[in-house]
Length: 452
Ligand code: SF4
Ligand code: SF4
Image 1: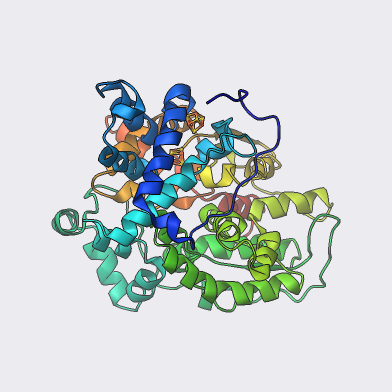
Image 2: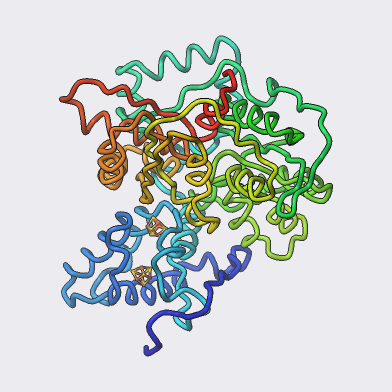
């Protein structure tokens, strides 16, 4: 195969051909994996990104031919299992992505392989399906009385041992608690202020709260609403909301992704057409609507309308500032903030908007760490991957704690907790530090001097 090194044109992404029966053909997927793995073996740029590439290169180096043709095809699944679809190899490293003639899309090839695995059924299907049912789990666990029971038992070492042996959830992995009061039914009513459109921004927003904010950390959602209200931006809470589908996508369960899309897209498309910007406070959920659903449903006008209206909250707030419509009357300095930009924020290609916003706060020093934390949704809590996820995250834990910050912060609050756990392990022999974990929108609320 010969082609020029890298592409000079902007990357494009092909739709995910998930409704074509050939997508699920093991033979055809193996052939494509052999082609792509061979290119990666010759390139090896991505070796430090995650564990998928080291596993691939070890398989090649230990094979009799020391080439991809020496690796038995059944071993390819080992590589697939290590990929958590962060998209960083595609978006930040690979010079062979389309329109380059080598047409390499490593994450979506791994997605195809995961979809095949899911259809075939795996030994961990029960655990994986349960972990990825965030909406159902949240609804069940937040029933009054049940919530206290769930939170209390999830901390008991004996229960965690059983969860590890029976459910495959690592016994020391950080697990989110469930909130006694969900976000959506308790969201404050928007201030009745006039809509003020800017050159770059719509003057009214809709909030897709996400399962995590609704069931686990509603405070993040309340803080976002306080920041919007402070800036006289009227908002609505999306009327009907189900999981965005990202946990199901990461499992390769594309039929469930399609079913969730049917639940979410009609009301979101209506809001998009009514002129709302739609904000989601979890980057993976934003990415789902901005990228994965549009690639799965390229001809669906409603999905494309939602894509156009969907924004990361900080992308919106910084654009608002450029429009001259954001208040900068910050009252409380934040001190030293170690900020982690998660993979699913990086690959949205909107720049470091959260860092820009935090740096607007006087007497605030922001250290930015742009590297995978290793948490990766549900991947990092699984028994077989948790230790690897801590290893992947180690450089992040080091860099973030070396700054001796007042706060550690990540747009992905799950990554934030994983980083907090990683730092605690790194510093287990040192006196407990006063560093606190806080989501960036919580930091902005604090900086404005707005009460909790
Ligand atoms: S998508 Fe992320 S996890 Fe998967 S191979 Fe690429 S860098 Fe690794
Ligand atoms: S994904 Fe692209 S950049 Fe990464 S190892 Fe493969 S060919 Fe190289």
